[in-house]
Image (tube, rainbow, N blue to C red; front, side, top):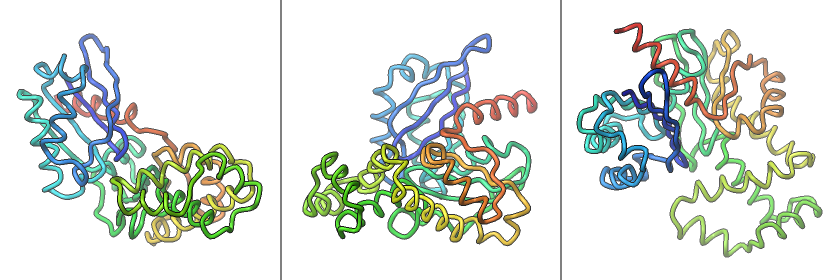
Length: 285
């Protein structure tokens, strides 16, 4: 059995190959080695029925996750998976590698992640090239759920929202400045907290203020990330993640206005990623 996982900070999608071309697909909470220790990951996996039922029969695991950009972080994932799947070969890579496999396949292109966080890399058809991006939600994450949540909250607290939108926001969340400060500086996972406000943006997507905020945010991602590659206009630029998927009409307009050729836009790459891994294993068999 081969197990493929695509993990962000908020959720992990899994597909397990069963006999006779059947597969088992399930989802767990996010597994990011920046936020979870090896023991915490093991406890999380031990509580998943689909894993406990099949762990002894899994022979190969391909894990692609946020926070797996460095060898020491990938080792945390590998050690945890090896503890739960004693007979399995484990390969842990960054979510950018998984995104590239799912969108580019074996062709050159730019692959972007626009979910809770954001990132970008150039893929040469075989390997993902190291870049200078992926600075996290404090320094970077332009165009991400965390970025837009921060912008929205800031506009609300500064009193810069249009009156009708401010009224809807107040009725939806009943937030005070003190609530926001406490959630950001005294509670865990402030990036998830900020990203949660993109639900309101989705509900109010036809409001000009929201559309302009999104357009400006995607322009910022294009300026700081995509256009940092001198030859960006020569390649298709692919996107994965909930922000890219749900707001793709505005993302496409921003890309078109900046001469960015949009390729695939996937909400989650797990299905295409699973197909890529299986085909590669068949070819290498």
